[in-house]
Length: 137
Image 1 (spheres, helix red, strand yellow):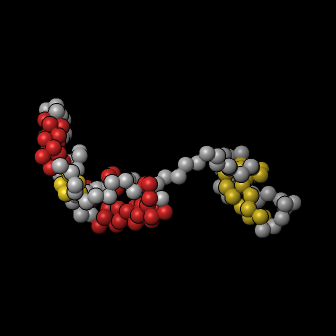
Image 2: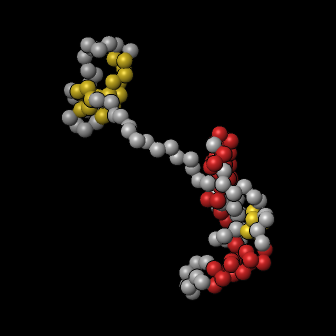
Image 3: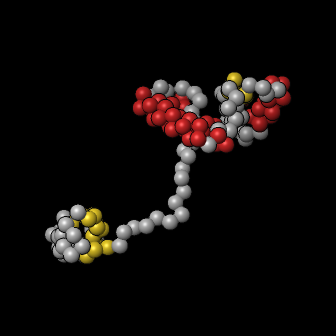
């Protein structure tokens, strides 16, 4: 059995198995019309997607839809895939230091273990004041 791509005049494209190269083309499953063998689609220059980094994953109860089970399961699977990828390619791991604070003034720039706390508070407070009124902080 050989798998070929077929196209119909009605615009339907589909794949079908045939017994051999000289077997007649199957009829269209949508309209029953005549079909023509189409070249297979080839992808060039594809790009692998490593998924979101650790910094882009939700860090709070609100970030996971207030504890929505499906959202939590989704991000758990995403995190597990990312961890496997980081084991294979350590350069993707980024900053692995524990996050000490991630809400309030540290929402945009989390406080991590080892950061100078006084400097981090000063920078985060200044950044929070720089946001114009009426826009979300």
